[in-house]
Amino acid sequence: MITPNEKRKLDLSKQETIDLAQRDLRCPNCHFLVSKVYGDVRGHMEFKCPKCKDIYVINFNYFRTRSRSFLVTLIRVIG
Ligand SMILES: [Zn+2]
Image 1: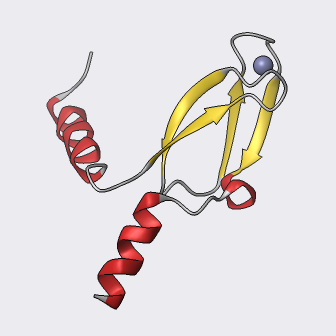
Image 2: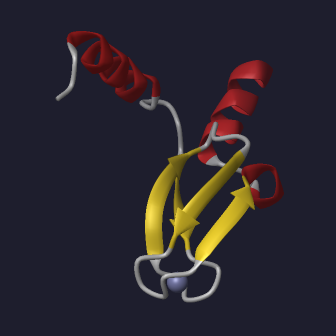
């Protein structure tokens, strides 16, 4: 059961993603779409692929791509 405080944090979290680019998190083995992550994601995450059932740990710092939000930020800084 979601408490009012948790609901408030969830709503806030969603609002904050409006300007963020979304990336697919795919299994490195079978490329199954495991989840979606946002451009500001940092650190380590463990995930289990629902298809091949393998468990992986990734550090998003090694999988950084030049996201749309990065470009938008760059444009804002320059402009
Ligand atoms: Zn897989």
